[in-house]
Length: 158
Ligand code: ATP
Ligand code: MG
Image 1 (cartoon, helix red, strand yellow):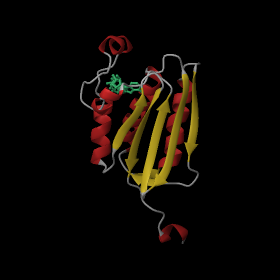
Image 2: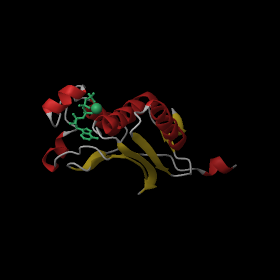
Image 3: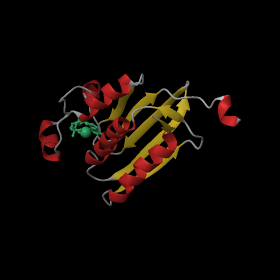
Image 4: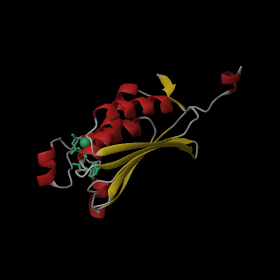
């Protein structure tokens, strides 16, 4: 299914903004120009829902969640940043593993299975994209992913 990722991403964030806890604020830096992608909408929704849910779940003091989307090196790039607990450097590479959770005691209270990011990785890879994380313990986390997109073709301007 082909659709404009920018429109779509706004609607996903709108949905979170309607039910977010009071202490959380969303900021958007999404490019204005449309970016058409041909991907499974239900699956990418599962991916983004998990990343934003993580950002809220692991931000116990609230804070800003910044969503970005832009085109770089002919790929659509998305990032979602939070100001939460962060991930120790040594563990960052492992968070995309099945059932991996950084702090067992804490994450047991917060619920979840440790599958969200493993599913996200499979889905992004299946679409020819990449996904990775940057984080500073105690300061926050950013999850990045890329997706191939269709350039506006001449046909669009006829
Ligand atoms: P599930 O998504 O299955 O409900 P989960 O959220 O624990 O459970 P993942 O989404 O796969 O599982 O995340 C794996 C682990 O990575 C989490 O348990 C948490 O320790 C860490 N993590 C993920 N996102 C963040 C974040 N934004 N800030 C801090 N830690 C994070
Ligand atoms: Mg999760």
